[in-house]
Image 1 (spheres, rainbow, N blue to C red):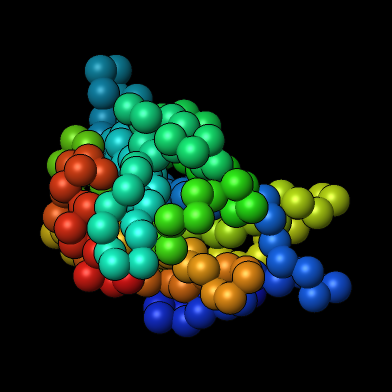
Image 2 (image 1 turned 180 degrees about the vertical axis):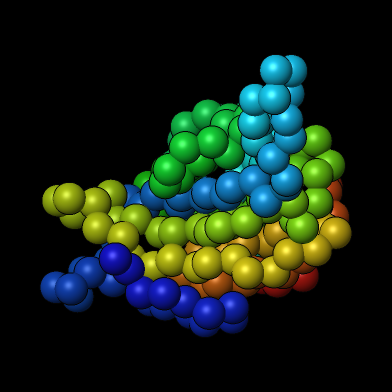
Length: 196
């Protein structure tokens, strides 16, 4: 289990041996908090929640350079890859994942912000157990480095979850956890820039 971060906390992305993390996986997960509905014949049916994980790439001046989301699964520089869209949030563990090779991120990119948006415009008061976690994919066993558990429910339709930023020759991870409104990543490019 990785370090459990609170909103606003920062963690330097270094390995136990002092080397920098090079390949990371940002996993995002959630469950439906909506009441169970009874369908035909009285069967229980959980309300499906369609959230989408995305990554926004910014330069040092805060200019957006690229996005990775369900409609563009690979970044222009090839450093990041979205593994696919989960339409329900069903199942244990990560519901959506974005893989990032930090060593291959274009030199112009200073920060990568990870966001979640509700494509179906369901609000976060219908979501529970939302989290993001950073996993070290460059080490054997892919240990979890950090986890940020989201506890902020409300009528917002998106969250600015976390970011990774260049720090000298390495990177650092920060839990952001700020509310936003948006259906897709395009709606979140400007709001996310406020947390660079």
